[in-house]
Amino acid sequence: MGRQVMPDAPAPTRGILPPVQRSTGLALWLRRLFWLNLFVEVLIVATGGLVRLTASGLGCPDWPQCVPGSLTPTKQQEQSWHKYIEFGNRSLTSVVSIVALALLIAVIVDQRKGSRRRGLWPPVVGILLGIAVQAVVGGISVRTGLNPAIVATHFLASMVLVSASAWLVWRAREGDGTPNPLVPREIRWLSIVTSAVLLVVLFLGTMVTGSGPHSGDDAENPARLSFDVRTVAWLHADTVMLLTGLVVAMLIATLLVARHTRAPRAWGAVLGVIVLQGVVGYTQYFLEVPAGLVEIHMILACLLVIATTWAVLSLRERPVELAAPMDEAEEAGDQRRRSVSHR
Image (cartoon, rainbow, N blue to C red; front, side, top):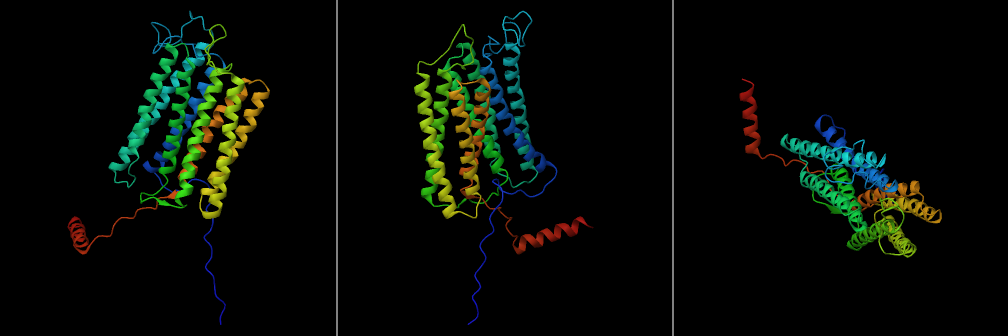
């Protein structure tokens, strides 16, 4: 008997995001706009953190104007340099809105030009609406003297926009076929539970900030939640440990059943960000919450949301949907039209 030749195992995929084919023109600019949209959403979170950490939350004490009678800071203001930090963060809202609007226009034009990219404009509209809601919530936070509950809502809404922007980056690189799960249903449900625990972690993180020294106000007018900051911080840390265990379980599960997909690499990235977050979190706790580490912690929170969004999406694939072949009548009609056009 001849030696039986076993089929080769599928080659492991590289990277976390789905591959994208080379393209030029509008499609290339569309991909760049997706990335730019994600970048500015993270940037506005980072500048918002800078506002809080420098106690500049009331640098512009009015809204939508900076001070009564002026949209921009004035020399007569008592807030010194704080007014420029707060006004800079407010101005970035316009940049985020312009990028989202440009993305919406590009998506619509792309589809009118015959692109097979479908279903992208509704989430872009959702991001635009979310930005508008964020502006209103920011105004309410100023009007209420930086109420910690409103500020927490402001941050959590930003995390939703970051997740939606990360979803768009991934979705734009996929095909338009029917999603095919790469793992059993139980693992997909575990990923949903993991995402829910991440939401709890983010919520408790806002409670820690709202109960601590970096609520964004000044020392003369403190706005704090009534929780004991030490208790809330340890509850936050315990929830992070639970999240870490769930992510480790997801990594092991995907290694067992989806080794040759992007899923293990994606969940490994989530675990890496969590470990880094834990190091920064415990360090800032034992160093009595220095402002620089809190800013890093907030940026890493954005990266954690992005990585988790991509990891959940890595559990399924959407193949490229090829154009349906023409039947004989359609093909004959197409040939007649070409022959007439050449006469």
